Image (cartoon, rainbow, N blue to C red; front, side, top):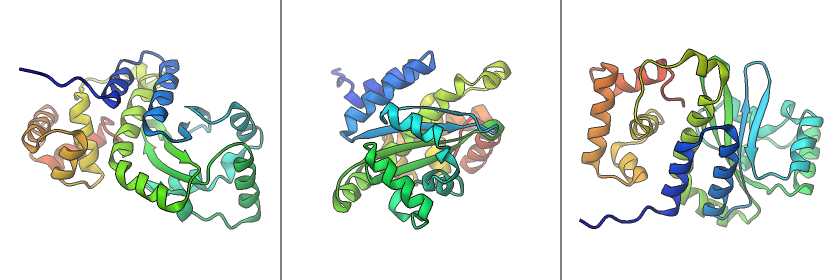
Length: 242
C-alpha cells in the first residue's frame, strides 16, 4: 500500500506533539506562521496570579513595550476574549476609547497588523490563554483567510495550549491518571465547541467512520454513556479545554 507523505502542517504538528520544553514551542509557532503565510502568530498565556508567558512572532520591542506599559489592563483583545468561549475577530471588539485608540496606534507603529483572529483558551487553576493570528491586509482578504482556516486554527490553538500546559509546574507535579490520545482530544474538543461530526471529520482529514472509532475509544476510557457525557467528563477532568 502506498502511504501519502505527511503534509507540511502534519510535520509541524508532529513537532508540536514531540516538544519537550517551552523553547520548542517558539520554533513550532514560527513554522506555523510560515505555513499560513501571515505576518504574526502568537500564543499568550495569563495565569490566575497575573503572570504572563508567551511565544510568537511579534517584534521583541513590542513585547517589551506591551509589558512595560501594562497594556494587559486595556487590551480589547484580552478583555474581549476573556468574556467569550468562541473565536473573536478583532474588528468586532470595542476600540472606541481614547486609551484603546492610543494602544492600537502604538501596536501598528510596532508592526502589528489591524486584522486579527484570536481563540480564547482556558485551563486548570484559572489559566487563560489566547492563540492569535495577525496580519495586515484588507477586510475581504482577511475574511477569506479566516473562513478557510477557522477550524484549523481552533484545533491548533487547543493542541498548542494542551502542550503548553504540560510544562506548567503545578500540572506536571499533579500528573494525570487518565490520558486520551491526541486525536481523541482533538475530536472531543471540536465536539465541545459545537461542531457536527461531519465538520469534525473534515477538519481532522479523516472519515466519519474513523471519527466514530476515536469517539468510542474516548468514551470507553472515560466510562461515559454517550458522546455528550464523554465531552462533559473530559472537560470536568481537565483533559480538554474550551
